Length: 257
Image 1 (cartoon, rainbow, N blue to C red):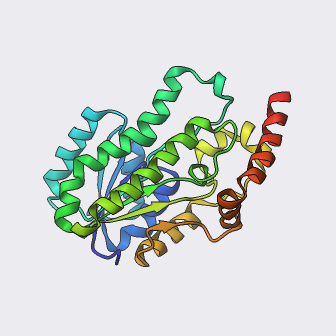
Image 2 (image 1 turned 30 degrees about the vertical axis):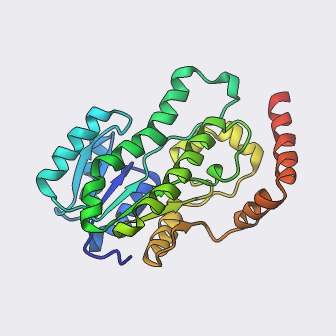
């Protein structure tokens, strides 16, 4: 898919991967930047140096705000070529330490919100024979201890992506699933107390944005980092017990601290 002169919606665009994607896509496309922090979105548009981009305030965990966002976007753009479902939150803690409200928040933002946002705009994507890009995670491929809810949410996004791709391909709609490894974001920093036990390799958002764009341009339906994590995916698939034993040993350390 040639990412030139496209009308692109990016959710969670005010920081992290969303912001990095916006900066790289802005020169040759029309961007609709969606997020909860309207001030940050407008500041980003100033940084991009063009009046052709649009900022829309929306908390995708709120269905009413998604409807309002649709109306605001439709006033300026009747055609949508690409949706990048990037908005999400990360969390890491022992399973029994989660409050019920925290579990609902993660699922509502990472899963339900992305699905409802996509559903709201799907007719426009079908009309344009456009594309949907869902940002998953390596945690949605290899489930880590203390990331139970986050991993569940990203496994769900992978399933949603695969199903939607197979359902809509005959209509000319492409669906891309992205599986970044740990990325340097505010969410990752908040989880560092647990994350440090896993000694994860961490990518800068700009690096992730580069291989996402490269993968979309090359029509790769599943986009992964070019890193050792690909080997871990192979081990997870064919030698699951090795992954179980290694991660269970780390979990024991966390519980004994």
